[in-house]
Amino acid sequence: MHDLIGTMVFVVDDEPDNLGVVKVVLDFHRVETYILPSAQACLTMLEEKTPDFLLVDIQMPVMSGIDLLKVLRAEPRWMHLPLIAVTARAMAGDRERILAEGFDGYLPKPINVLTLIDDIIKILRDKKRK
Image (cartoon, rainbow, N blue to C red):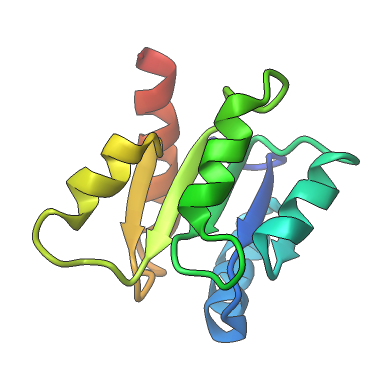
């Protein structure tokens, strides 16, 4: 079927509508999905579980997705986790800026539910090649 069956993902986003759509798609494809409404919740959950990858909203209150990325990249046990930015920032140059911050991939909002799984697989394969 596809390469994500049985993988674990943390979806970090403060917008319930975004979380719901992504969770439905990932659940349908048998991905173990943890919905986390903040970067702080993500850091707490990382003390208990290590996902195969993270989908991270960029614009969140208190700690942004970019701030979360910096914390994870500075911690040896989490520095190699694939982080995929999921963001409404879709203006010219935003993708490049976000990838330059250190994210492994970029998915614009609104999420394209028809291509989400294939997009994630491509990003994860590209990271493995690096």
